[in-house]
Image (cartoon, rainbow, N blue to C red; front, side, top):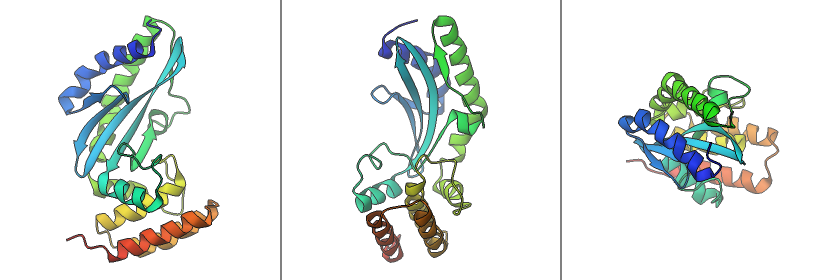
Length: 214
């Protein structure tokens, strides 16, 4: 098994390319990410490699709505969480298959081949259908906002879920913006959000009420 991180990444890229390239994905070697254009943004698959010498690998899947991410980045001034590569919804392979542990140890070529087979099987049965489903803004809205009072499995940051959910609801013209604002305002209090971020959430709501989508 290669001991260099770039060589390990190349092993998995060569194994996944035949599956993903025909579906319109291209590989970003800097971010170890496959991306595919979607309506208003992109869907993506990130290879998450950890360790040194003996690596582990897992997959993260996401969908980005550009207008949502760009607006919230401007409102919050948080370039770390809202960058050109940030996702509006994100989940891990483990969450998507409801398994507590879906990370593979790569000690040799045998375990690497086994991991590659597992990843390809996951993508065919769960990952690609999920990304197909989230390629439209109205589906991202549905996944983010179906139950605003509860923690959401499709984000890693519940605070910013409130911002993202509110913004995309406006962009798809769902008619629930005020309802979601009130629900997420309560959520932010429960999450212990600081006053400054709360004020930015109010600013987002006021902006969305006044913005024209025509």
